[in-house]
Image (cartoon, rainbow, N blue to C red; front, side):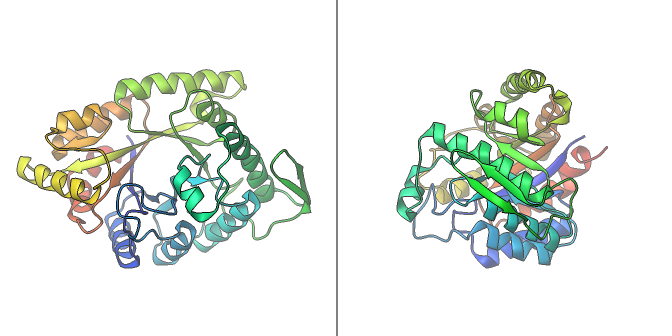
Length: 321
């Protein structure tokens, strides 16, 4: 019916030990994929907390695991030159035996750019960079003696080795709900669209927009897979749910105030929330609307029982043909 992946907001105090604990448990439990954000500083907590560099962490994952697929959700094109992204991603695809998926975005968080001295361009320029970067990455993955002359990037007769294991290249994912820029770019360049925090109704409406743009560029709409990233709250009873919600609120101290919200309220905000039976019902409805992969965000890296409950009580009813 649909695949289940796990997503970490890794800038929020993800240490090496926590990363390896989640990686090992997700692999052992048979989750289809493991994702992490790519940010330079925490977004909803104390800036002095850990924020492991994304691509270094993927190298450690590649050698610790054998089956699980993985990637950034998503890497901003503003952080790294696309030729560097092409080389890093091809190297890690080789290291993992062909399990990397490349999620890309335009970048949005101005504060981290300013803090680290990374130029933060206008929105128009960032999306121009994303489009050119997509072209550069695919060209370097698949070709030799590549030349490119764009507004933001240029290459001159360059061949990039190693090449990725996956053919024709690793899947490209574009994440975001934007109708003016993100979804049209997805239709033109991506293998997968990753929506974020949408209800069934919201996802259905956005998917129709994606289908329209696919038709405009002469592409079969169903050739673009659709995934959904959603914050997760799961518990076997109301007591567990409230305990975990309180814990999440404590971790995301600068994030949205969740005080007094019910699981129903969270679902209306685009969460996957409730008991295993309630979550199965939510995910089945979304799968029927076209979600082929769920990317479930967890905030408490030390509460690995969440993964156990998903694997035992949800995955057998969702992750099946």
